[in-house]
Image (cartoon, rainbow over all chains, first blue to last red; front, side):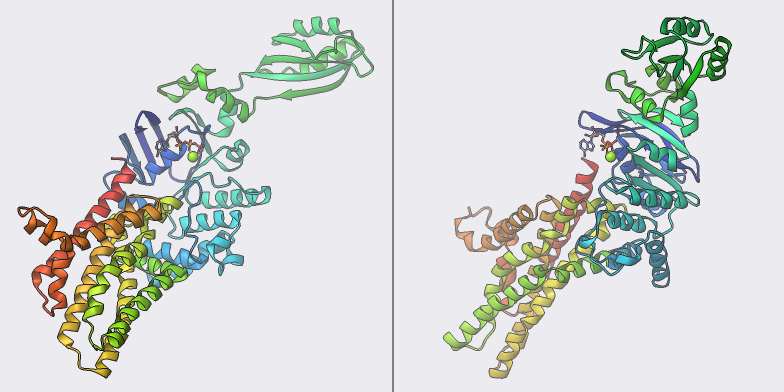
Length: 332
Length: 237
Ligand SMILES: Nc1ncnc2c1ncn2[C@@H]1O[C@H](COP(=O)(O)OP(=O)(O)OP(=O)(O)O)[C@@H](O)[C@H]1O
Ligand SMILES: [Mg+2]
């Protein structure tokens, strides 16, 4: 559905998008993730033919965005970042305008407007003016205008920013539903959102892609380390430390401040280990063998949030994001 | 084509959903009426010429005021992004907006027919002169509307768009009165560019193809420049 090859967009000396390469297959729901200024919006503006690339190629449905922008725009539905809508219009009038401008015939318009307004839950405000709408309904109207012509590709720039938690859940459900029949590219800063909605995550940083994969794959790939918190009673801290350090796979054992001495609640410590081993059974066995009581044991895996932070900390940025895996590996 | 009408309809709706159009049209009618009645009662003349002579000066204000919003507001609110990512040619967007402002102006101008009709009841106006005079005004309005639209494409501030449009229109209007200050070499050029000379023929009752062509080219040039300005601002050239 989308092919992007060494795409660049420069604003003066700012390299907003700097050598982007990716493809999106039909039917995928892709999340663009990245810190402020990573180039997400700029990428979307090029895909929707609002801004021309400085160099490189972008194709939507096999059609080049520079050579045939009208055809690309026909296939795309777009929700821009701050949901710009005509405040002087009524909700229905606005949808009617978009449907007309998109070339829907008189017979198609009514049902199309009804359907998209219905899917986006706009019924309560259909006869209101746009300037009276709450943020949530504005967002819904923005979505409704983007899907009124049943586009093959939906491009949504931060579709849930500024919404309350209930609205976020509803809009996400809607996007997931739309994603069943359309290709969707959305950008967001909210990490759980990507996990909730997307089949695939592209993490952008400084105009390039630093990681690409499904949320699960990213977890797997970046499970550099895991941490275990355990609490054991019936043993002195130094003895526990020694025994744990002898277990194979344990890299480090550390105690929290003031936890050196044993108290009634047992000794707590934190164990660091590589991501691909599971120490939980071994620790349990160790305690049983020695007659200690294992009061608590919890494993923490690297979250998507930590992956994001690792990849997009300013100084560690790869300047040229060649093959994505390699670039991602470098920063770790 | 369909896209152009969609834009036209929207803009027309926007004019009448807000007080701007009503205020401008009412002001235009009142001022026209004042000129007209003062002619009628003070000078005791039942004729439209005085009104036809004052009208272009009013257009210098009213058309930039009507068109200042058209594109500047889209830049300011960011709605330009949605508008130009619809499958519309920039040409259709610009034409649709131009036709909308022209339609509003034409309605206002049409309403002023009330006055000549009164004249028709009271006296015996020269119908030919009136028709030519109105044609001239409509053409002047079209030219000023295109200038105002171009100004509106160049900035995201309505005020700046108004001032810019006003000065260009006023410049074209005043040029005819300032001909005596112009070096004689440039005189033909200035005569050609100024609105006044071309409009004078119309108010005499003469419709000359060259005058029509003059206004037509101002419109076409300004609309083409507007299309360019739209693409230029967006494509960062
Ligand atoms: N019109 C413009 N003129 C100049 N620089 C721009 C322009 N648009 C974007 N930029 C710059 O390009 C870079 C990328 O911006 P972009 O808006 O694409 O980031 P983003 O990933 O969408 O960020 P955010 O998460 O804050 O929305 C930024 O450094 C920004 O300042
Ligand atoms: Mg953005």
